Length: 373
Ligand SMILES: Nc1ncnc2c1ncn2[C@@H]1O[C@H](COP(=O)(O)OP(=O)(O)O)[C@@H](O)[C@H]1O
Ligand SMILES: [Mg+2]
Image 1 (cartoon, rainbow, N blue to C red):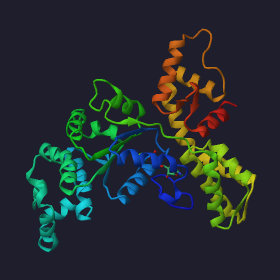
Image 2: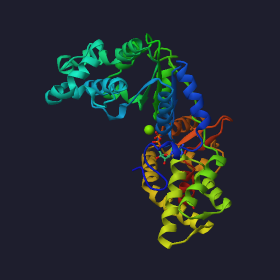
Image 3: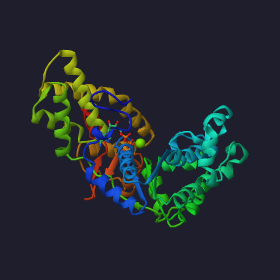
């Protein structure tokens, strides 16, 4: 659900995209130069939001764009059709070009014109039905190359939840994609994925289809100094005076995690609405925070349940939450290392540049600490 004063749960619009300016600028220029990029990071840290903005700006510069979310498709045909539609929309301005072409009534009114518009792309009425799934897929993967050559355009294509391509289709799909993509001189790809481990293997494993195809960039944290003016402005837009220190307290409690910060803000806001208060004080921040933590409890409990058959991972997690050394006397370091790796794979913790480990969601850390008390 996106909406409300502080949007939550899906990609946000440009005006709610906090602290991504420098990163977006860098992505836009890399992609415009033809460099493909891979971004891997846990769910709910804002990958899709920033990618949409990157595409919007690339389009503004005159390039073609297309975005598909691999999480959504049921198979080759479904993917191929949607991918072709996303590419053709650049020419026709119509989201579902293929279904317009296939629909007889629409074909009589407007479809023929599309057929003409698309004539040079070997697309005619009823085209998709006549092809086998594999033929359609190959056509789809070839299309960006053909389209950009014919129209003398450059193009940026975004694949969201890219690792899911092998679930939707099969592992062969990566080889097939690469075979086509590497011949496309004017197309740059932006790959997003929330399964970091899988993404990393796919793009850095020597035997993998996408080995060195894209540069892997870390997704920067959103700085407190970026959050503070945004949050203050949002509250002010509803007539709520928010003190600088109360706003900072929100960011401190969320650790700056994108969705959790928005979530606390949102809960604080609804608490204010309920009581009719017009000023944001520390008490309200704490109330909103507690509500947010309560609402997140089922999510956190599920992660902890998953760890019930991984006792060592749970022990390590508790130590990390308490800020203690994870290595213990009497436990082999390898065993602890494996537990840490497992927690990283599950996107519960991440390794910092300095080699220490931190919680992806600082609120989860708080949750565990409360449980330990
Ligand atoms: N840059 C940002 N500024 C503000 N909120 C953000 C930002 N990025 C993400 N969010 C919050 O996180 C939620 C999920 O964002 P989304 O882009 O769908 O993440 P992902 O694709 O990584 O799962 C959004 O609905 C919003 O509440
Ligand atoms: Mg996403």
